[in-house]
Length: 486
Image (cartoon, rainbow, N blue to C red; front, side, top):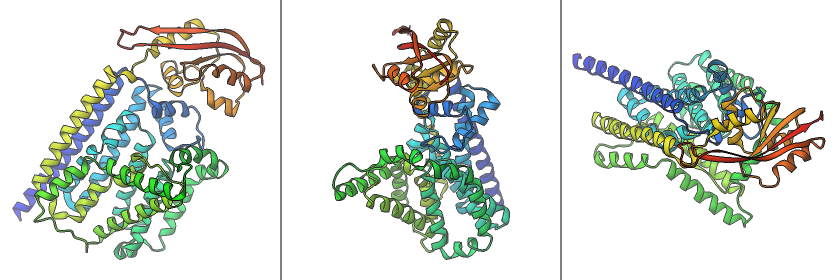
């Protein structure tokens, strides 16, 4: 009994140290991002521009990440700290949620193994830090929802039912593929008798009511803007103009490759663990939790397969599967609990540590030496302010140009050319248009087509930076346009 108590104390201390190391790891990421001179990429640029106005919808992406970014910018100011702090806080919450979920199912060692394994997913360990935003949030919401669900099984109560509904509603507003995760969760809870008896009772109405209440603001907007919200996603994932059988075959192949690529190299590490301890690796398929995860993945892949069989889903990316596949380490050790051993924990932690160091080193090198992460936006912003102090607004044809210039001078009213051409907001006074070469010959014409009363007062080219400098060089075409009230 004393040995059991000592072992439990050691496990508790190990878990506490692991969580502290996690917090330190993500703090280092924040420091690295804030101190680097790397420019904003596409997803981060979208977040920087979209937060300026709180809206129930923002086009092709759900609004929750933009709302959270608005909150962070309000607290910390419009800077890289607010941008990086939000992302790393969401990632830390994902790891912590998986830690506590796994601890309640397979113990402390299993919790450390499962949470540590997340860094082995390239989409989570590397891509999430590089640029992803909505995929980071939806993964966090999926992890929190699963944590709440497992807690509900053990300690049912009205507050937990309400929290589950709130998390599902917020998850649907983080990224639309959360619906597949939620469908898998509901289907698995219905198919496993022990879960069905514990969860599906009259308190389920609390979950449903809270889900509808939390989703209502965006849901009402979505009903009126369904084509706008789904058009870009349909274009990316739509099958080619080919026979039905060809599109289905292409979609099934894309699903298989996206799944395999996402879980690489995790499946290699876990395959080695299974092979090394194969004599003890007995699948506990009669356990309710094992059947839950088997049913969950059965429902998830059945749903995706049904979409593929419709002929409308021909291309699937790994990050689209992220909120479902990141649970696979937990599912593996729930099905093979005998593999939760001290040696396995040590091997996973060493492997995860190596990956974490490589990721930090790679991101640091990319920020300082990457060809696509350097541009003299600070100098460009200063030159534009000096030359055109009378400009009331700046309109950029490229998303990254608009966001990076806005980050360097938040007092500007910065807009994206394709957006204002489509929505045509009221604009008056002198407006500065810039184009970095993505729309030769059309960028100015499209603006004047949207605002016929506009008059070009000045036009030219601005070169900033030097190729041999660390920040490199860039050139933009500009036009100072006077717009009367439209």
